[in-house]
Length: 482
Image (cartoon, rainbow, N blue to C red):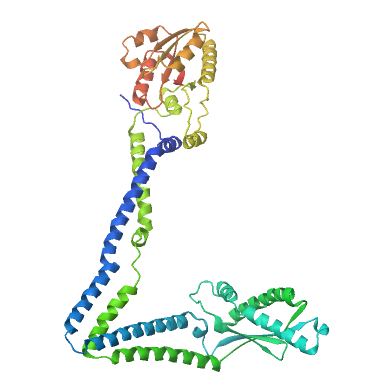
């Protein structure tokens, strides 16, 4: 027997997968918890290797051994006191060294080439237009207060952060205080000297400062009345800077001095005192160190957890696809038309009302135009269509056959009743291939309507039915999905 090879309907396959969203969601959750479980055990094992507790115990044991070894010495108390003081002093100096080294590394000023320094010079004239209403002394002090207000406002961390975010947004630089020098000269003048690693950045910093001066002027007017702020000098240049050379040298010398003091602490002790110092220092560092973080995602890559969720979803999708392709059942009305090589009379299957929001959304996306929310409306349309075709072919008896049982289905009963009311001779031969009286019923009918159920009727059985009818010379009026 020739087997029917059903063509894959991508839309129908996608709909079949989406309709199994509950199973897919369950497997995704299983994958998620499986991934988190692996992350937990992996992070737990790493934690066991590097916990604070293990570090502290090691330091405690070592210190206990040294104390036990040196406790019989007559100078043990003095030795212990000196070592304790040196531990605190040593750690303090190390913190100083780290802070100074970090500042030099992250300060723009200490990373500028002293022989190629970009400079910008701004000079502002500040005046108070109400000076005529004051005495000479009062007006002088009023201008002095206004200038000091400008200087204090321009030396703010908000301005520094603004410059870093706009001029050095992607660098590791954090400190720019030394780049800007602001002060007063000639009584009513404010000078602002800027240094930078390039002329372009010097101009950017200058633009930010000029904008900030406008903002500060508006604030000053609210306090001191009508304030005049006029930019008189705005110069840019690139040259070597002797002062910067000296400052760089002084900073490195300071760092070297701290390092020498740390070495001096080590060299000041020998023998038992040095041994106790080293054991105590290890204990001190273990006590002040922070406990390692215990985060699943820190020890376990997030990508693997995401991968576990994706694999969890792919497992049920794979099963659904295999079942779809391996199943020999009729899936859509298009399959029935192709197998029977006849026209589609309609679909009278009752549409299930979805209550779940996700199912309702899927109904809207994958809506079948052959379905109506009211199956009785579909029955009426199909009945009228069948009657028109029977009138066209001038026949009065009709037999409805199918490869599965459907005679008791509410939709079929409704359709038959409508046809009977039109004085048509209607017979039903469901489960046709296994019904011994099926061919007898068919032989007494003028035309045949093949009725099949989606996802239940097998394609090969439908094909066999159609071939038997054609061999017997029976006319197939059309096919119907019930």
